[in-house]
Figure 1: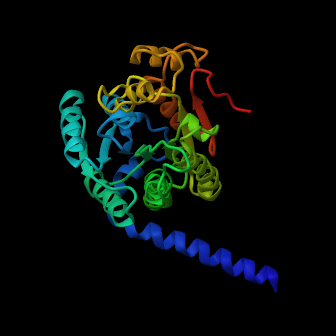
Figure 2: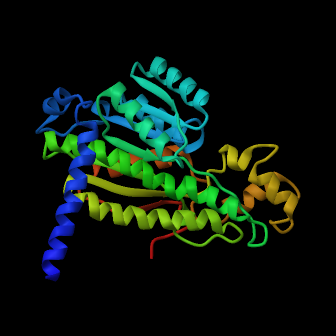
Figure 3: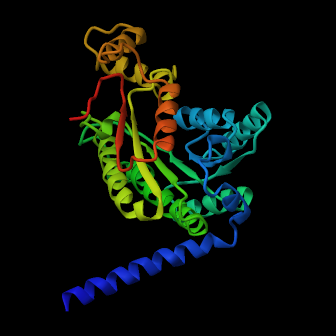
Length: 313
């Protein structure tokens, strides 16, 4: 009896997968998939969707792969920023890029985002879930609303992006049973070790690695690799270096770095934590993303890009 119950549950599970794939089936450019069947497609032949693409890591990742000739949908809550960036990349790199306004914490918005990308490009090969927010503070400082907002973007957002991207990728796999696809979460070194007075962010990133491993197991039979990239601190990005709201200024004013008298002192303190002596750069993360795409025999991994500050145990 127990075996029958499990068998029925499995059949229902697979039927749901088939139905989800059908949602996008008629909107996929089947001729593109057929033409690429049986050969290793390069970056210029792939369609990317990058969330959080109006600034920071997301912008840099979208820019780098557009420069390699890929077609890229840039998504962000800052719709104007995403559209402006897409126009620049299309012009500079002679490729097709579009900007989409999207809130990854909203299921309807994510579904519409993926639909718009598929309608424009005829498919989706690589989903890079990069949208994220940070709210630092002690237990007594962080409200329930702030905690849920951070998790809504960083944790739930990754789930939703995976859910709808996977539906497209499964439909493409049905056309070419040898085809591989990629879902990549831009996680953080805070997903590998706890972060004092930053538990909402760190917790969401720890959860993201749990999702990465679980999705990897579930989606492997469909040729979908799921990996996470865990960057160190992007010290040159706006989160840290903004002169009015950046963490360098916040940490200086809060006295978080003993003896620091300037923001340069704060920066030097954080650089000294890294064995390789500098903060993470966008190019470092782009190389890691390119690696997990090109590596056909790796899934469910959390790849540190931290200059040795955080090492796998």
